[in-house]
Image 1 (cartoon, rainbow, N blue to C red):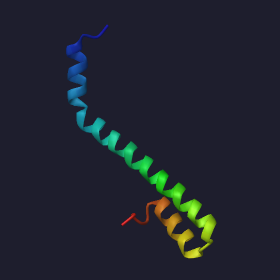
Image 2 (cartoon, one colour):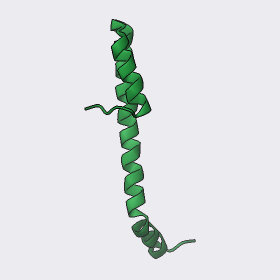
Image 3 (tube, rainbow, N blue to C red):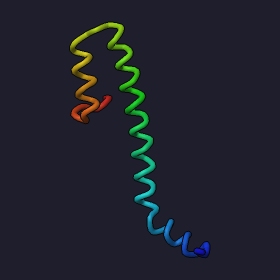
Image 4 (cartoon, helix red, strand yellow):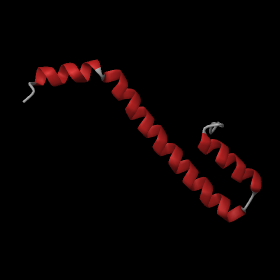
Length: 65
């Protein structure tokens, strides 16, 4: 059984990597939602240029901005 001191020390030492991991998870969730909405829009309007942009964004070649 670990004492709270050991757990606190571990969390303190890993705080940066845990923060980055948490931010990456949030960013990935946002990216997946954007792709889902864009795919629905693409099914409605069937524009080739939009499809290419969605693929480029999903590969990481392009940002949302």
